[in-house]
Structures are given as structure tokens and as C-alpha cells.
Image 1 (cartoon, rainbow, N blue to C red):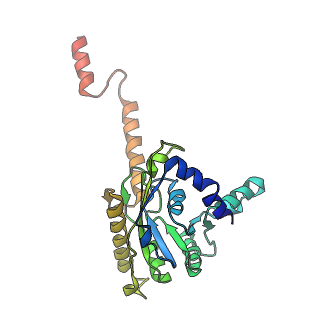
Image 2 (tube, rainbow, N blue to C red):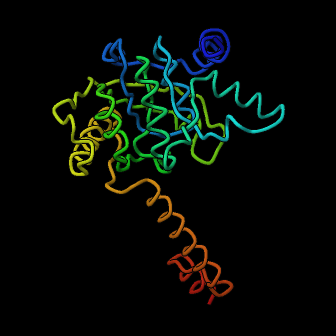
Image 3 (cartoon, one colour):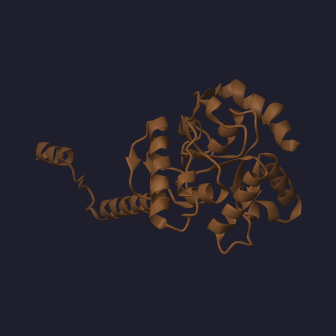
Length: 255
């Protein structure tokens, strides 16, 4: 009940008035269970994707969001539950298998399940290699995958910032992908990789993002390492030395 209150009477109308999100290809989303596999530009993605569809869209979230003690924990649990998120099933061997268990329950009930194959937000707006959990979920549940692209949410809420600036986000839904031809092959890692790459290609085509054949988490770590090295090099530079052509020119002029 709280989900529909937020969507149609509270948060949803506010977001629609302020940002006026656009929807393309909503007719591709089937009436029955389906996986919405989306790129991930911003923490605002999980707000705008469900806003564009009349049905409920469920995502998984950390179990801690639902088990924190006290009044704050209660309100946190109510908000995440009401906004269409379910906790990761901790009966699984790890977080990944727990997320699959939670997702399969949603799909078994005929729902729409949202997933970000990249596993984390893109730090630079590019599309990164997908993890194969989405492929495993598609094969084990037997439901279609709808490639989904969000555009502009990284302007509304840029990485590292709470708020950005107002723009019109776009949510695009592609044609459902059917992987029933691979039934029973969910333990074949080559099949899982092939399916995942096919899904990511469709997301790339819909979003127009540059694709990078590297996991987003690795790219973030590499970016942090390069930034740290650059800072260290700048700190080690002798005082008054700019290290660039402009600095050399200023020194020559001063002499």
C-alpha cells in the first residue's frame, strides 16, 4: 500500500512535476514476470525506472536496511519496503546467491524485478562489463529479460553528490530477450557470459554509452589509484615548480 502511496500521491507526482521524465518503449514490458536489466548511472535510477511503468518494480537492497534497530531503523525499513525494495535473502551462501533467491520469489509471484548487471554505479558515465548473475537469474526463472536504459539521471544526481541539476531523464525499454534456448545450461559459465554480453550490448544500444570491457568495480579502483599517484607526484614536486610548459615559460620570462 505504501508503495502505491509514494508512487501516485507523494514522491511520484513530485518527481514528475519537477523532472518530467520521458518514457520510450514501455509497450515492450510484458504483462507477466520479467527482469528489467538496466544500466546504472545514479542512485536516482531506482526512482525513475518504476515511475515510468504502471506496475510495481522490485529491487533488492542490503538486509541491514531492514534490520536496523530503533525508531530510525523502523522508518528506514518502512521506506525501503514501501518504495519497492526487498532485502537480500541471507539464507544464501553469499550476497549474490541471496539476491537471486529474493529475485526468484518476486518473479515467481509474477512481478517485475529490476537489476543492475554492472553491480555498481558507473563513476564516469560509461557502460561497464556485466556480471553473470542476470544471466543465471534469467535461466533459473525462465522469464524474459527487458534491456533498460536510463539517460540523464547522472545529471540529476551525479556520482559523489546528493543533488545535481534539473533535467529530463529518459527511460528506454528494449524488446524482451528470450533465452529459453539455453534452458538447463545455467551452470555453463561460457553460456552465462554470452547471455550477459548480449544483454549489455542491448543496453549499450539503448543508452548510447561507450562500453568498457572491464568490471565497474575494477575501473573505480584503477581510477582511485591513478588519482592517488597524481596527488603523490604533485606533493613531491619542489616548491615553485609547476611541472608544465607554462611554468617553464614563466621562469624564462622572469630571468
